[in-house]
Length: 280
Image (tube, rainbow, N blue to C red; front, side):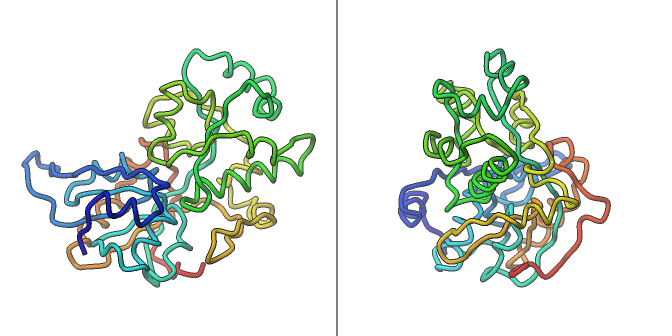
C-alpha cells in the first residue's frame, strides 16, 4: 500500500517527521530507478539512502513497526535499530551493526568543556538545553530514558528532572536542533554525530548500551512503549526483505561492512548473521 507522507504522519499522530530519500545511483555509476521501497530507522536514513536500489523512508523504529503491523505501509525491505521490533513484521532478520549512545553538541560551544569536566552535572544544569527523541516512537528515545535512569543509580544524578526539562524531537530532526542552536546537547547514536561531523562525548559503557559484557546491567531497566515493555539490551541493528524485490537492497546494506564502520557504526566479526529476532 503506497500512502502519502501526509497520510503516514497522520497515522503516527502527527508526532514524528518523515525523512525520505531516493537511493537511485548504482555502484557502477549508472542511473536507475529504485526497484524497492525501504522503511528504516531514523538513524539509518543517511547510510541507507547511499545503498542503491531502493527509495528510503525513515521514521523511529517503533513507528516503522506500527506502520507495518497496522497495515498502513507494505515495504519491500525493513531495517530497524532494535531487532525485537520485528515482532509482527518478520520472524527472522539479519543482524548487521551495533552502536552506542553519546552526547552530541555543536562545535565551539561552552558545553563541550563542561561535559568533559562533569557530564552528569552539565545535563542537570537549568541553563543547558538537552534534546532527545520520543521513547514511544524509537529505540533511541527509550534507550535515552533507560541510560539516564541507569546513571542515576550510579550516584548523584536526577534523571527524572533531566527528562522532564529536555525537549523531544523526531529522530530525523534531532541533529538539526543541535546544529541550529535549539539545544545545547542531545543524546544521540554515535553514527549520527559521525555522519554530521559533530563533536560528541562518549558515555560510560555501563550506560551507553554498546557493550555486551554489560548486558546484565542493561537488563535491569525497561520502558513501556504501549503494547510491550522493552528491557534494556545492547544496541543491535537488523534488516529483512519482506518481498523478493527488497532482497538485493538488504543484501547490499548488511554486507557493506566498511560503509557501516565509516558511518560510525560498529560491526562485530560475526556479522552479518541471520537470526530469529521477532521476540528476542
